[in-house]
Length: 86
Image (cartoon, rainbow, N blue to C red):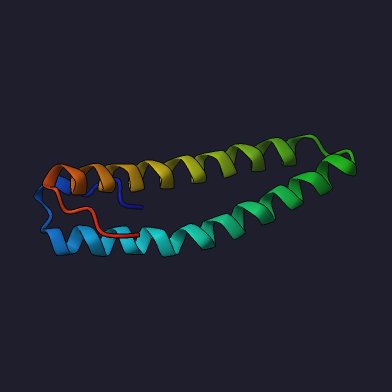
């Protein structure tokens, strides 16, 4: 997603825009993760072991990477002293 970007060299306006994009993506990711949990529960109930395990790992990776990107942007904004109001 955004792993290749260097937040220290980005202008302040672009950092704020990236943070807003990630906030809007947070809802979509949450819905997708919820769907994967539903499929995982369905697979577990119907005796499929591999599908729930793979979907839980995928959901964790998606949630963790999005949280890390938001944290990196927030830290850079705080370092610059320009944390926008929520």
